[in-house]
Image (cartoon, rainbow over all chains, first blue to last red):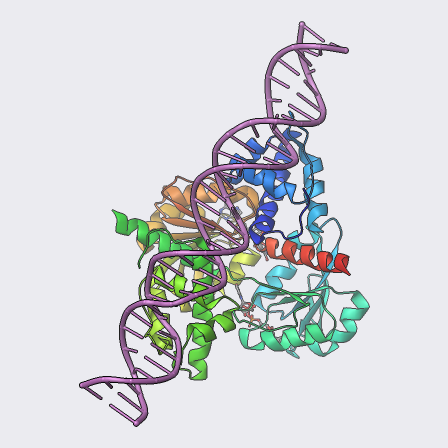
Amino acid sequence: MKSEHIPKATIARLATYIQVLSEFKREGTDVVSSERLAEACSVNSSQIRKDLAYFGEFGVRGVGYYVQDLITSIKRSLGIDRAWNCGLVGVGNLGRALLRHREFSRKGFIIRGAFDCDPYKIGEIVEGMEIVCSRQLPAKVKELSLEIGIITTPPERAQRAANYLVGAGIKGIINFAPSRISVPSHILLEYVDFFHHFYAAAFHIRFAEHQE
Amino acid sequence: MKSEHIPKATIARLATYIQVLSEFKREGTDVVSSERLAEACSVNSSQIRKDLAYFGEFGVRGVGYYVQDLITSIKRSLGIDRAWNCGLVGVGNLGRALLRHREFSRKGFIIRGAFDCDPYKIGEIVEGMEIVCSRQLPAKVKELSLEIGIITTPPERAQRAANYLVGAGIKGIINFAPSRISVPSHILLEYVDFFHHFYAAAFHIRFAEHQE
DNA sequence: CTGTGAATGTGAATTTTTTAACATAGGTTC
DNA sequence: GAACCTATGTTAAAAAATTCACATTCACAG
Ligand SMILES: NC(=O)c1ccc[n+]([C@@H]2O[C@H](COP(=O)([O-])OP(=O)(O)OC[C@H]3O[C@@H](n4cnc5c(N)ncnc54)[C@H](O)[C@@H]3O)[C@@H](O)[C@H]2O)c1
Ligand SMILES: NC(=O)c1ccc[n+]([C@@H]2O[C@H](COP(=O)([O-])OP(=O)(O)OC[C@H]3O[C@@H](n4cnc5c(N)ncnc54)[C@H](O)[C@@H]3O)[C@@H](O)[C@H]2O)c1
C-alpha cells in the first residue's frame, strides 16, 4: 500500500511491536501471526496489518510474519536501521539517568555530546563522556554531526537551549522539560511528558471508585 | 455536557492546558480565551472547548476563562485536586531521578515508599527516603495507603514487581520498564515509553530529507 | 434597562482511525 | 501438480475524534 501520512498512534504502536517481537525472538519463536502479536500487544489484529501496510508487505500469506525479518522491516521503515547522533543539553538528575541508560545506544540513538552551563559541571566525566559548555554547541554539533537534540534543562531554560540547538543546525528536538517552546517549522519537535500517564491513572482510579 | 468515556488524547491535552495556564498565571494573565490558549498549545480552539465540555462548563460567554479557576476546575476534573500516595519499585538510575524530581509532589503524586531487592541498596537513604526491601511491599502498601505503583526495575523483573504490587492491593501501576505485563482487569495500567518520540523524530527527519 | 459585542458551549459536518469482512496468495499435503 | 488450508493485504463499514459554524449567554456601555 505505502502511504505518505502516518498517524502518530501508528508510530507508537510500531514501537510496541518491536518490543514484543524482540521478546518473541528471545524466546525462540521464528514465525508469528498478526493474531498472536495482536494479543501480546493488546490491540486488534487488523490494526497491526493496517499499520504495517503503510510501509509495505512484510508477511507471507497463510504463514504469518518471520519475527526477525519483521523487526528488520519495521526498523527500516521507521528509519532506525542506522545510528542517530544525539546531543543532550542539561546534565542534571534526568540528564544523567539518560546518559547512563544503555538502551539509547542499543536502539541506535547515540548520545555523543553532553552540554551544561554550570561551571561546576563542565569538565566532569559522566558515563565516559565529558560535559561540555553549552557555548560550544555550534562547534560540537558540526564536529560530531549531531542531528537530534535532547533538552533536559529546567523548563525556563528550555527555549534558550532550543535556540542554541536550532542555531547550531540540529534537525530535531526532544524536549523533556515541561514547557512549550517554539522552533522553526522545519525543525521536528517532540514533547516528552509522562505526567499525563499519572493524570490518567488518577482519573481512572477515582472514576472506578465513583462507580461502586 | 458531562460524559462518561474520555479519550486518552483529551487527558494528555488537559495536562498541556494546565502547563500553559500555569505559565499564563505566572505572567499575571487573569483571563484567557480558548483561541489564545489554543494557540499557545498548538491545537484547535474548539478542541479545547470540546475537551472541557466533557467535564462541565468552566467559562464565561463573551469573556473567556478565568485562568486560576480553570486550572482548579481541570485539576478537580482529573482527580488531582488531592494527593496520591505512590510507591516506587526499583531504585536504579531512573528510579533515583524520579525520587529526586520535585515535580511529583508539586503535582500531588507523593512518593512515600521506595523498594528494591538489592541488599546493597536496602537501607540507603535517597532524597530523605529509606530504601526498603521489596518483601515488605504488602505491609508498606497498607501502612502508607499506597495507591499507585511505579515500576522502574529492569524489564525482566517488571512482571514480578507488578505481581507484588497487585498482591499488596495497589490500585494502579505505571510501568517505565520496556516490557508488557499482565495484571487483573480492575488494576489500571499505564506504560511509559518515550522511545516512540525518538522513533517519530527519526522517521520524520528522514522523511523530510527524502522529500528534498 | 435595552442594545451591542464577544466568546462560550454544542449540534452537525468532516476527517481520521479503527474494526470487520473477505478475496487472494503462498505453502503444504497427498 | 492439483486441492486444500491458513493468514495476509485490502476494501468496505463502523466508530471515534476533530473541526466547523452558529445560536446562546453573559458583561458592559450608553
Ligand atoms: N528528574 C526527573 O525525573 C524528571 C522527570 C521528568 C521531567 N523532568 C524535567 O527535566 C528537566 C531536568 O530535570 P532535572 O531533575 O534533571 O533538573 P536538574 O536541575 O537536576 O538539572 C538541570 C540541569 O540543566 C542545566 N542547565 C540549566 N540551564 C541550562 C542551559 N541554558 N544550558 C545548558 N544546561 C543548562 C543545569 O546546570 C542542570 O545541570 C526539568 O525540566 C524537569 O522538569 C525531570
Ligand atoms: N535510565 C533511564 O534513563 C531509563 C529511561 C527509560 C526507561 N528506563 C527503564 O527503567 C528501568 C530501570 O532503568 P535503570 O536505568 O534505572 O536500571 P537500573 O539497573 O539502574 O535499576 C534497576 C533497579 O531495579 C532493582 N530491581 C531489580 N529487580 C527488582 C525487583 N524484583 N524488585 C525491586 N527492585 C528490583 C535493581 O536492584 C536496580 O536497583 C529499566 O527497565 C529501563 O529500561 C530507564
